Length: 275
Image (cartoon, rainbow, N blue to C red):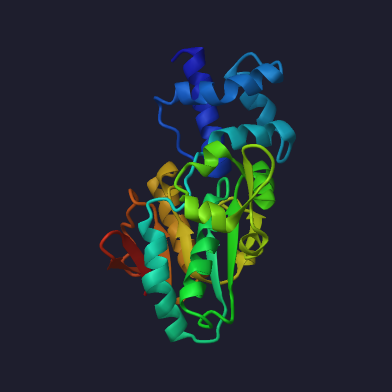
């Protein structure tokens, strides 16, 4: 094995141990494209040198920047559309009927740049406008992510024109955003106020989050090994209230946990109900 391959293997082990992400052996190009600039800025010549530098710190600027670079993925407003329609037309009415006058809690388990939790908040607003008074107890959305720099950006709720063009209708842009300088918009305060952003590594404990009625864990499990994925889904189950719902990504399936979740066909899409 060449020295480059050895260094890549060491980095793969570091990334999986730190945040559960399982890099394929053919992903050297991805690592290079995401880390080259960072390595240049810090005068680091090789991937091996970078791995050595960041392994010694439980916290630290460079280590965090590397994890940010490797875990940051582009996302969309109202990604795949159907989960938000299913939430609005099926899940919310069912949960409200089962527990009237109870506040609802939703967990966005990999909030990335904030589009998912803010899309959820807009969906809640749209439901309230059609079903006046049904959500009088309120809805709280807890959004978590591994990246602290992402969370800081999410809290500001500001987006440029490129981000705004990814899945957001003109109607929703007008209704839920205020202009903030040339080519920038900010999420309106009532939509932001429903969302609380918290740092969380999905490999760590979820105990401090409390219990939820709904969990969105979409398009993140694909990066984990089968063993880690099963562990995460088992622990997410423990955060869900009886009768609660789990939403996964369109290309993700829940296999091997028939005692915990019941598959619900929504046409389009599939969601999972707690047994």
